Image (cartoon, rainbow, N blue to C red; front, side):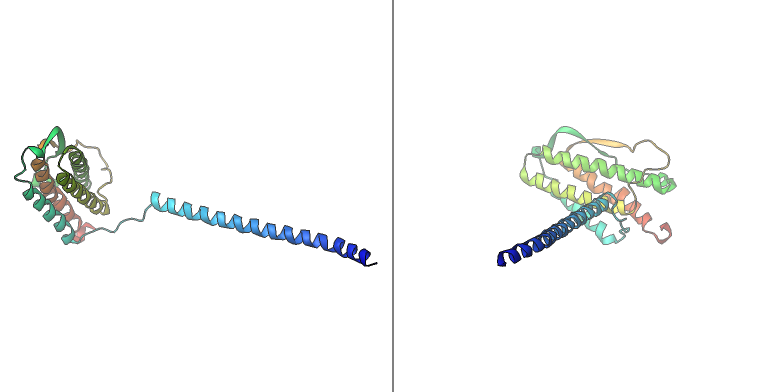
Amino acid sequence: MQTGYGEICLKNLTPLWKESVSRKRVLEETENFFQGLCALLLLLLELAALTHPSPLHPICDARVMEKFIKEARDTENAMEGCANSCNFSEVLTVPDTKVNFNKWKKMDRQRQAAEVWEGQALLSAAVLRARDLVADPSLSQQLGRTYSNLRSVGQILRSHNAQMEPALPSAPPPTLSVRTLAKLLSIHSNFLRGRVKLFLTDACRPEAG
């Protein structure tokens, strides 16, 4: 009789046990599903943040730009006595830093922005190439800092939408060719003190907003 009752209990409990195991498995699978879903959503949000970053607020603190101008001038002065080790084995193309102020004032803001943005991109590429050409590690390190500063200047320009294409295409800005580090650093300093500062001064006027 005990065996019979045991068999009956076992028969009655088996479906319940199977149901309990099945329910546990469903809960685990559901939990795993939602964990995977959350991970996927986080990944999609990160990708969205990378592809559609929040717009930058215009940077108009003059002290920021003055810092980059001072560093550019100090670097230029430090390289005045550099001899053969500061010559490049190839010609580098840089923006012409001469500014016709009357012509500049007559330009619309989009054209001014395009000239500054294209010049900054051209100068950044030249500095990056110069870093690869110099043999002296200290010079290479200095050019690395100069390139980093130019990237920061690019972020300032981007905060003013300088990267936007002008409505009407126009001729590319004039360029120069350089073969020495001294000339490259002089162009860098003049470019920041010239077109970049002019553009940012106008862009940061209250009426420009």
